[in-house]
Amino acid sequence: MCLSVTVSFDDCCLKHVSSLGHKVQRNVVQYTRQNVDGGCNLPAIIFITKRNRLYCANPASNWVKKLMIRVDKKRYGAKFGEKPYKG
Image (cartoon, rainbow, N blue to C red):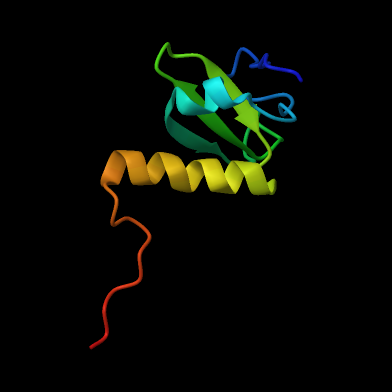
């Protein structure tokens, strides 16, 4: 399991991690998207931990999508992502 991240001088991810351990995933507090533009030629989700460590991940991976939902629920409350009631 690779837990390091490679970020260039333009603050771009140069490769993705294949996975994050359970303890690292629990410490993720937010994420940001890296779009392909300018000097950044790799789409990525950049997870940020409590200790400000950065991990670049492939936005197409299922575990990445699940972790993004989990982080959103932590940040925005338990009702985030639920369908509204249509009584």
